[in-house]
Each structure stands twice: as C-alpha cells, then as structure tokens.
Length: 577
Image (cartoon, rainbow, N blue to C red; front, top):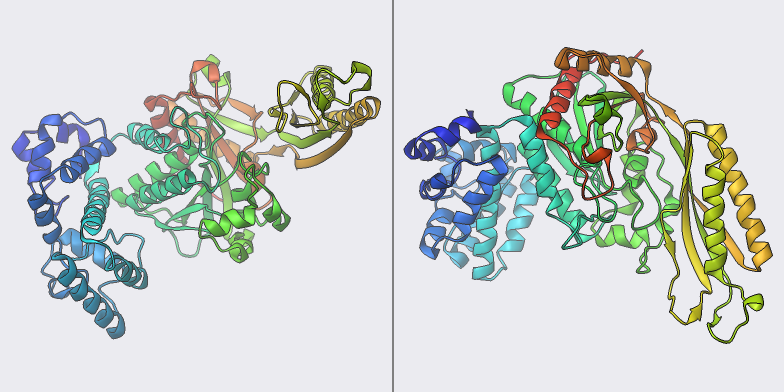
C-alpha cells in the first residue's frame, strides 16, 4: 500500500505509476487528475478520477471499456489478465464455474460483445456466478448509449475497490469522508433526511455495502434492509456484533447512528489490510431503522436481529397510506424471511456500539471518548384526539369540541408532570392538525409523547399519571381520545466486564482515565441486550453536544481516537463470563 500523504507528494510521473492498476491499462486517468493534488482522502481521489472518465471523449471511454477482459473469458481462463482482475474474478467464484455456468456465460458474453462492440464489465465484488449471469442477461437488452454509461459506472466502482486496497489514509479522515458521502444522499435538497425504505434509504444502503466490500467484508442486505458485513476470524469462536443505524430523523446531523457503522468499517478494513486476524468473526450490522420517522414504530433493524420483531408492525401505515409490508415488498424484501434474521444467542459473544454522545458531558470534560454505563429506557406513545369540526365564526366557545385546544392542554400536562421530579423528562416531539385550515375548528389532533428517566419506576409512574390526566381532560372537553403505545423500554445496563474493557482500551490509547456516563438517549444496543451482553463507547461531539440537528459535529481527530480505541478493544477482547 501507499499512504495518501506520499501519493500527494510524489512526482506526477510516480503518481501515475502508483495508480496504474486502478483503471485497466489506462494511465491517462491518473494523468488527468495529478495536478489536482493534494487530495484529502480516497473518496475525493476516486471522485476526481471517475469524473475524468465520465467526462472523457468517447474514443477514450470505449478504449477503457475494451481494456477489460471478458468475465471468465479465454484470457481469464489462461490467467492472461491483470492480477487485480484475476483476484476479483476469483473472489466472485468465476474461476470455479460448472460447465453449464461457463457455457451460458460465454454464450452471453459473445452476444453482448456482438451487440455493443465491447466486453461486459461488472464490479463483481459481492456477486456469485449466478448473479453475474443474471446481470449479464438483463444488461444485454440495454440500448447502446445506456449500456456504455452503465459499463463506465461499473468501471468506476471497480476503481473504488482497488483504491481502497492500495491507498492508506488516516482512519479519522476516512470516517469523516464516508459520513460526508452518506450525507450527500437525502430526501431533502437542503437538509439530511433518510427515512426507512425510501429511494434515499436504499441508495444509502447500497453505498454502505460498497464501503463494506471495500473493507474486504462478506456482505448482504437482509429482509428488513439491514446491511451486514462480516470480517472472518476464528472459525470456532462466537461472533462479536457491532453497528448502529443508518436511517435519520428529519433535518438530521451526519453522525448520529452512522458513526458506529463507519468506525467499525474503518477498523475492520485496517485489520484486514494489515493481515491482522481476530480470533473471532466480527459482524457489523448497519441497522436499517431506529428512528421511527416513517411508520412511527422504532428499532425495526435491531428488533429483527435480536428476534424481537413484532409481525403485527407489518400493518403499520405511513403518511401516504402504505403499510410497512407493502413498503418492504416494493423495496424487494421478502417479508416471510424476517423471522430468520434473528441471531442465535449461543453464537454471539456480545454486542458493542460506538455512538456520538448527543450531549455535552465529554465536551465539558475535555475528553474525546467515554464509557456508557446504562441506556435510559423510554415510554413512547401516540395520542389521537377527536373532537368536532365547525366554522370558526359561527360556533360559540362554550359549545366547541376543539381537538387542538384539548391537545394543547394535554401537552402542558406532560410538561407539568415531568417537571415535578429531577431525572424525569417528557417530550411532545410531534404535534399535528391533519387537514387543518385557518377558519375551521380542529376536529382532529395527533401528537406523540416520549417520557424518559434513569429510574424505570419513576418513568412508568409518570407515564401512568399522564395517561390518566389525558383521559380526564378529554372527558371534560368532550373529545374522544385514542392512546397507542409505541415503545416501552426499561433501562438497560451495560455489562460491567465490557465497561471495564472499554475503559482499559481508553486508558491504553489516550493515557487518561476513562469517564463513565449514562446515556439519556435510546440506542440499538438496548434492543440487542435481550440477545447478549452489551457495551457502548461514546464519542465527543461539538457545538455544545447538539444532536438530531444539522449543527451536529465531530472532529477527525476524535473519530481517529474512537477508531484506535475500538481496534484496541477488539484486539484485547475476552468474552464476558
């Protein structure tokens, strides 16, 4: 490998020579970007090289495509292709085809070449022989211009995987760059929003899978959209699970959830490229859904992995009237396969999660990382208030059954009750008058309630009191109510042994004692606690610790420390007794 720092400082001639294997027999690609140095990272370098390819004249583009050998073609079978191409084809099983597969593939290759005048090109990482053949059979029907564009994009994907194996960059910079890349995929043009099973969500999953493949992991996307990557380790050992979620709240920050995926990926890739083999497999799960934005139910991804997915949630409906079941099928997922996602507890050593703190404690203490002691549980519910609509100018105040006014009193009741005792918080995060109009008395109002405390008893007592008060307000104001529980989660302690292991790693890497602190926010780890022992590492965020907001920040230096602490944790890991 060559370091990014060296790649940025060597002569243009040496730069081109160093990147000669990235685009097949096409030194003109690195030649066209050499003057753009210094590049801040692999992703930026790859984007520059890909732009050079996609903006090149047609003759050069065609020459680049034709420089690629046929998959399982005669040259490949003779071993007369580049070492990179040989490795890629072997990894996809194309060097061990059955005679039937070989005959079918070569027949399709001939048809494709006859139709387009260049060989079929595919980034085969993550493919099997059957999926390669199926992709070729589908693409042979494309138009010529469309297929040239597809071939060039596949060549650029191949280049990304090759760059990741060739160029070494600081882990913190790599983590920040991946987070920025994912944040460029959004449902909103001016803010980051990635809600469950939308096109943006699926594009994000595909990009995370590319990151996993670039790290050298065996990957797949499961029946709820979790992106899973496994770093091979000792064959007879229990797995260490890690990860976090990749969906976001509306108008989100870049690091909530995603940091835990990207730190694990950066470390796994570094271990694999250095030849360091863990004595156990490491499984990274990018959980598809945690926030509950679209279907108002939370933790779909981790609940499926922990064997706690409630199949009645398949009937949950989004704002557009689609059920979760319909959305899953539209995204290509097999609903019947969801129960099979559950991990076998006997094969799991623990689950650990890296997450931004989402608060100011580490920032105020001047510490980059800390050990989580417990995750605060929460009681979440949705309330629907149904009154009677009427003309704003003709219905006397004494005769009104105003749903919004009743809801407003209920919201204040939440605030009042949760102010009574320290350590108790209550939030109405969503308040809506469906179909409301300026001159109409609201006939319906909907809102959510989220109550949290470090004490289960304190939280549950407050939730019960608030539910009773809401019913009393409804009776007095002559409105109907429906209260629906969304989540009832107890406080979840982190395993003492894992807390101690995190603390030891922090002290080895930073030379400072580890701060231990509770988490006031919920995390996927609290769901995984029903499966196995859990542990969490918090990472400092800036701007006063703000989170769930575009101003959420993280420094590359802190990301690097988190990665080094995580790597140390993995290297010293012993299963909790």
